Length: 567
Ligand SMILES: Cc1ncc(C[n+]2csc(CCOP(=O)(O)OP(=O)(O)O)c2C)c(N)n1
Ligand SMILES: *[C@@H]1O[C@H](CO)[C@@H](O)[C@H](O)[C@H]1NC(C)=O
Ligand SMILES: [Mg+2]
Image (cartoon, rainbow, N blue to C red; front, side, top):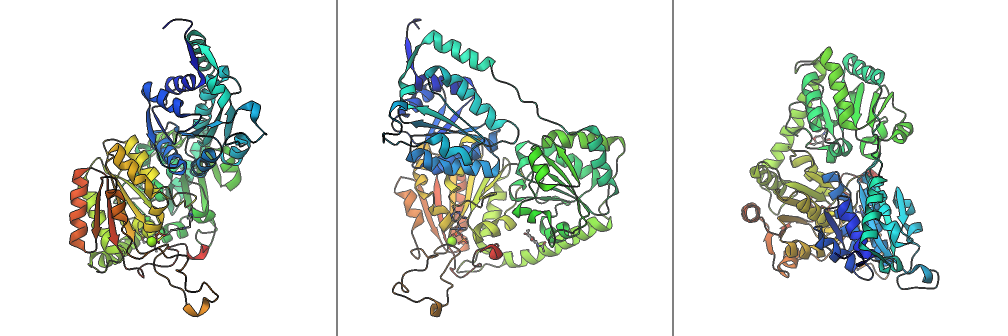
């Protein structure tokens, strides 16, 4: 290319993204970023175009979690940026690496009511860990490098890059571009991940060794750091029972003999030392406090963030990458091993309780209840997923009853195969997560188990599944609304609108399966075990976009699922 050839900001931004390792982008195009998307495609980046930035943002966040590289969301200015905040904030809540890039209005016209004008740097502040604006074209490469690096550094999270329209239209020569890119690359700093001191590792091992009732808890932070092999080594060499958080499920198989998932109450209520790895002591773990936990429990907290340790004030805090800290712990144990054994009273009591809980559950699961309750179809789905074998499908799940019951029944055997509503309990993540999973792991089938309300938040993206022909099967538990049927006492509802449908109710018997048919995908309407089995077996082997609309008794399940005390 001739040295004098000019390239604009869109091209330079695309070049910077490609050069700094971005392989996938998610978004919605329009003025002023359409050309950025097209240029990115020409440079080998796959751009997945969505209907709505919310879903695209959720996809970018999940892609970051699954791959360990930031997922990139591209949006237009103003409303596009605002919709994208859903993804950015969810990435922060889940501590997943993500970069949102938005076009913004002309810098000269800012403050005069320009097209889609918004102070986007201000808007993203509460929802991001770092943001940058390229104020001239020459700043684009270094800004791109910075947002990518910050998203991954320390505790991962969302970052934002603002690209004003005038900057996207400025030009530099090809050779100027090259030197700007090289300079930005040279300026990148490889972050040093802290690792706990060896005295702390020794203390942690001593605590575990001398505990009467030790427990290992791990979450999606451990999954993100790919700590599964070290966790397996630790659990199996010491015989300490373990409890995964919902998205920690699968780091060790749910069917492992030391899994305490089915004796959760006993495990957290009675343990005296808990090694918590890559999981926060937030609401999901009852803040680590009584009455769910013993007031005597000593927490050993392993977290990549020093602030998290300061916030929780554990008995012992180990700052560091989960995998590396576990590596050090395993090394320390190896010199002087200990193992509880399956006949240790603590291990035995955990395993006894778990067996009781599981057999109680299995009796309920074994029944074929029609009209469907939650358990019968969940058992059939569990068996169909297990029938796929390895590599296991990635499970996406959202809803209240549907997600809570699914979490207990569906089995995770491989790491990072579960994506759900997460730390924020966010509804609407479903289709975005499905698309991210399919794009991040093309060898895996993706299966979504969704409440009908949860599904509705992002249902239009079934068209995106069809357009890209992604191997995603979406199963909708259709109980006619949020939590299911209208459970109100009619006498309590008065006033001129008392005959309106309940705020929790949707159109009964909605034909969700026909939505995907409108775009050429396959839809199934099922109400019996055999119909569901047939739909699953056909759609799982076809590996083509499908929606299975499962008719559920609207009065099965509970109001607000498991979280009744929070309602
Ligand atoms: C963004 C967002 N909006 C609203 C809610 C409140 N909410 C919690 S669960 C839920 C839907 C539950 O219904 P459904 O998905 O049909 O599951 P079901 O309990 O019926 O199986 C809603 C709206 C939320 N968690 N997130
Ligand atoms: C029974 O097992 C399920 C998951 O399998 C779990 O959610 C529930 O908390 C367990 N019950 C008790 C009392 O531990
Ligand atoms: Mg529902």
